[in-house]
Image 1 (cartoon, one colour):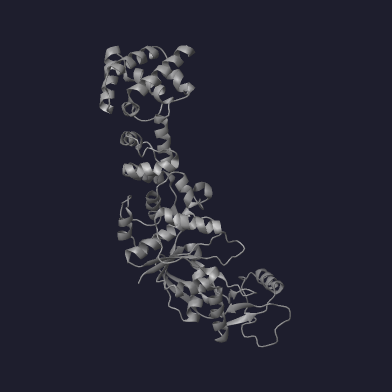
Image 2 (cartoon, helix red, strand yellow):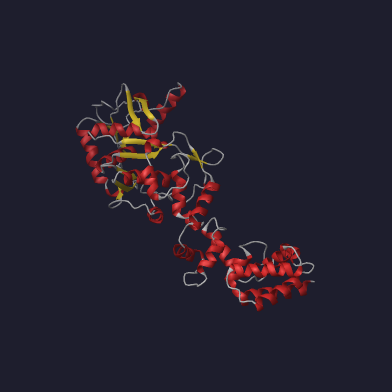
Length: 463
């Protein structure tokens, strides 16, 4: 059975690089009717944060990527890891190393002076003498001394690492706390992982983990190391570029399906297709098709995708989502009119909420630059004539309001701009927003007339 996992450390928020990796793992498990597991790697007890754990779980809930079973916490498995340390010691595959920090520092300085790669020299590998006093040992695993460690990576192809690059690394620190590569290998094996998909910053951890797998007789999973996400300039992604808390994307008004669609295309493709539903992602995704090279974050692409999903979201769902952004039109009879008028103009839910509020909330002031441009010449007279036509009409639909605009244009023998600009500033306070006919259909005749009359009053005071 295909079993994948995501294994974040709860020392900070879940960022989009981590979310992309977990998405790839989730899609591969779902495609094969397998399991997607979550493991919280919280062995760094000093840096762990309950808030970070909650944030990670909230992020998974928001994007809809449910994991199978219960989340596994490494901090609750120390007894298990200790058992495997003892097993390796008993089998002669690991040993106690009494090298002090001072000795290790001196060794590194000596190696650097000779231009050699710094590595542990194995001095306690076959030690049978009397241990030095007052030194609490670490536990090191016996890594292969000759040859190469070779594995096939589903993204990068065959990877060959000389054993000289992998020294007898520490698997348990003084005091017994196990190390990262040791516990990861044990957990991946015991959780039954068939495929490990992770960032390529872990590529050189893999040989060490293979040493642990082989020492304990565990079956190796398939490995896939995914290239990093860069910013638009091809450099390391920073918080300013988008490497921020996944939940910040929700705050900024992005839809989870847009974010997932955006992330799946960072490093994977299916022809020229850009829009993918979740079902299509599951059907088409294959980790062997992940690009070897890094991908560049593109905010314009994310905004384009988000706008697409907003435009195509059913109105009842969209109205429900907008509540969190300060707009509640769920029981408003004009809901469909409002959303039809605004959803083409909102690339995010924040922008959409702003567009709706711009219409529903009467302006308390007018943009000075726009007002000066719009309220000049015959503007007040044209607006007054327009309100007269409105009061005499029974307009309800955008088309009926548009007909009245055409009527004033014909009656006054003016260009559309002569009514359009002053009318827009009258209704919204600025030269922006949805179609005038749609806005008036939402407001109705009485509110439209009220706003226009206030604008005429403003003009009379300022002229």
